[in-house]
Each structure stands twice: as structure tokens, then as C-alpha cells.
Image 1 (tube, rainbow, N blue to C red):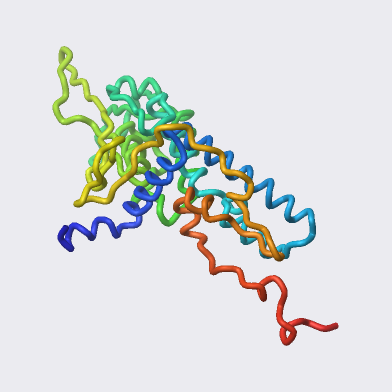
Image 2: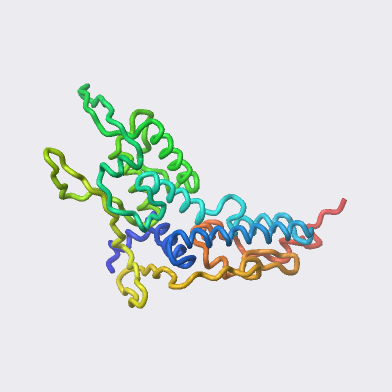
Amino acid sequence: MSAENLKRYDKPQKKNAYLQRCMLTRNGMDFPSAMNQITRNVAKAATGLALCAATGRYDANVISRAEVQAGVYGGCYDLDANRTASQIVQDFTGVSDPFAMPGLTEEQIAEHVGTEMVKIRNKTGKEKEKLCLTSDSRERVLRHLNEWISTSPELHTPFRLPGYGPLTLVKAMHLLDHVLATMYDMRYVREKNAKKKGQARIHRYSLVETTDFAVLLPGQPRSRDLPNIPPWAQAPIEDLAERDILQAADGIVQIAPRYAKRQAENFARNKLPGILPEDVEPPEKRRRVD
């Protein structure tokens, strides 16, 4: 692969999409089961850390650190970003699974999201009717978009956010496309060859899979030219035991390697240096004496 082609993979969006795709396939047989598994893992971590705090045997700062790494405190990016992305997908298509988005006509999408014809004045002062989201659907879509952006503003914020005026369906679809590209390196685009029905043209949208990663199927050999995304799990993923989520001993509590491996961006973003004994109990020279 040439150095020019490798530049594509250095983009934050591309890295995030790869991490999320690999994380999801490690956690389930499909998107819904992966989300359920991540939810259970975070809940177990929260329960275990609460018990550690209740014993009084662990330093509060060490517990807070483990809570950040486990996604309990400050939010779990893997869970929150995918959950809000799923809500945005459902707003437009009626389907919550981004990987199972059906091909829909513009008319069908308009029915799902809720639209109306609005007269919009262009830069030259002429008015033209355009298909726009209703006030309720606009408020709902932008609320979900803002929730998704808040999980990682520096990564998720679009180049151009909608203003206060009417939001056309075409611009709204660009927002959906941005979410899919950032999270999964996929596109939901309008097909070029529109079919005619009388005097009108029927525009159809379809899901376009990534071309920068090799999305493997079960039994398929790994690609030598592209980064590989493993296939979805072929059997239900086992729940992690408590010892596989947290390691607690000698006054130190931290997330276990098996749980860290099931995470993606959340763990990488909050990767902190290892805990040393002096982090729990300061040495004699640093110990404060009243």
C-alpha cells in the first residue's frame, strides 16, 4: 500500500470507525446483541466498584480512576455513541440497527422522519418550495444529533451545523451520512439513476459498505491489503465473570485485561499509566504529618 493511501487511515474518523467496528464484532452476533453485552459489562463494573468503595479498603482516587476506564464515570463512549447513533438511524429509517438499514425511497424516508413542503427564499430573493422536516421532527433529530456530538465533540461535530431556519430533508440526510461515516465508515447515499414515475423522479437511498476495510465473513481469509474487521461472533458472547471485569488486590482496583480488550475508543481515550503501590499509600517522605 502506498504512503498516499495510508494517509486515509490516519484520519480520526477512520480510526474511530475501525475501533468501533472491531469492538462491536467482539461483543455480539449483531448490533443489538453487542449493545446489550456492553450494557451488561458496564453495569457489572459499576456494581463491583460500588462494592469496593463500600468496603473502605480502597483509595477513593483509585476507584474513580477505575470508574473512568470502565466507562462508569464520565460516560462509556462505546455505549453512548452507538446508542445515540442508533436513535438517529431510527429517526430516518424506522430501523435501529445501522447495519440493517433497508433501501428506501425519498418518499418513504420523508414519512418516517416527518416532513412538509416549505417555501424557502434563496440568495437571489426567489421563493421555492422544498421538502423540509416538520418543527417536531426537526427538534427530535437535532436533539439526538446533539446528544451524539456531546459524546465526543472534537470528533463528531459536523463541518457545518444546521441554522435556525427550516431543515431540508437533503441536508438532514447529510447529517445521517456524517454519523454513519464517523461511527462505521459507511454511507447512506442517494442512488444516481433515479426512476421516473409519471413526471416525477423517484430517488432511492441505499447503504454503502466501507471500501477502506476488509469486512470479513466467517471462514474468509484475512486481507493482506486492507485492515481487517473480524466477522460478527457466530455464537452468543459469554458474560464476563466479576474477576474478568475488575482486579482488586493489595489496595489496588483496576479493570481486568479481558474487559479492556472488549472496549474500544473509551479505553484508548482514557488510558492512564499503571497504578503503583505509592499511588495508594504515599511514601514516608511525602506523608503529611499533622
